[in-house]
Length: 305
Image (tube, rainbow, N blue to C red; front, side, top):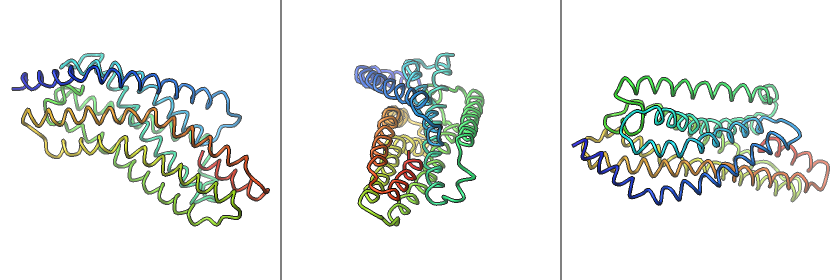
């Protein structure tokens, strides 16, 4: 039955290959271009390192690494054994997926501290401390994946294709790596939106700056939820139900495949979202009509870009 089920799955993946190749090719071209450009601008063209610049540099690097591993990871899905290629490509893929999730959350927390606790945040926020946070996140995500690899090998295999043959307790790492950041992101984003809504507008320029800031926060939150929530909802149902029949395993595997490809689009959407965020706030900063309004808009720029 396992052989028949795996053959059916391979036939489905083969049927989807032309669509998957076109989608992956478009994603790679657009993602590598946007994130490569973002890294160049962040590392070479900006005059001063800020907290958000540190986070965004790491985010662009994580997205680039995920995109580079994506073709090899998809190729490894054709096999049914834990080869070195599948282990390495899928490890890089998973590390950078959850680093992207962690870094977007870190940006939201940093934004929350700057907006809601401005005085206290002066001692908590600096480019050096942001770099330390990024180093800790890289270490945590990588070490959790190493532990996942050890447990997976003990349980029959690390790769996606081998883990589909059995109940996969290592899926807990994926669920915790998403739902905890999601709770933080939603809380921090809503708190920032409430704070911006209550902020009195001294003049039309400042009111427009606040509206644009709110749109940026909403855009970041919506992109995160749309890209990552469907995949982790499917993983949650799959983990809780532990499907045993071939038909159910095939359905869940196909759903995981499709929602994973949706999550891959986050690599491009991150770059687009932060490009427009930086562009809008740069324009807002230049639009100040008075010294007081200009100072207020600079504060928004530092906090949200």
